[in-house]
Length: 196
Image (cartoon, rainbow, N blue to C red; front, side):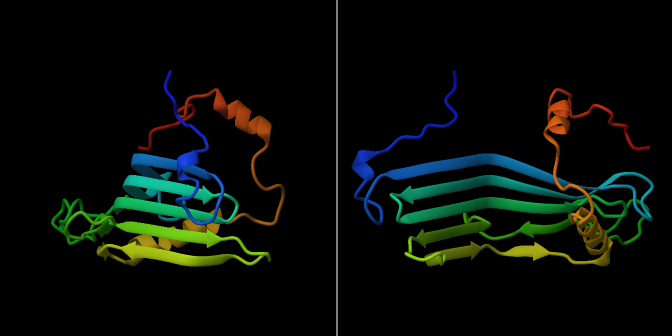
């Protein structure tokens, strides 16, 4: 049996954080996280295709709550890379494709800082107020150096994808529970057809 989550009050830490009361801490650490944006068949694309692949390495998210007065959120991402997966992009750092033609690179965003700095460090502290106002007395945001390549070859398809992903005002929004339960018992590859 493996313990995935433990929640407990730590009396010895009660007076170490801001305010008084108990400490609640939850943390999530992922060594790698990959997200793909998939485009349905669209004009100029013969089949379903992957627009972008976003790769994050060593993602840490931590939430600390000191009593009912103060919350502290920390996010850290060590490395990030975004690849445009559309046809006609050159692999790695090359800008020359298979036919010797100049092509835009596949890697469109990557952090390129020196040393052991994380790509992103975010720290937010929220304090309690007597009103419904959100008070953030302390905020830190740090970005490392990045390379970003912007061209119409990926921006226009991304904008079209975002426009298609926005929910319309027509019909119900979200999923029905039964649809979710029907999909839960099936492998993710069920009904998948390999593109030509």
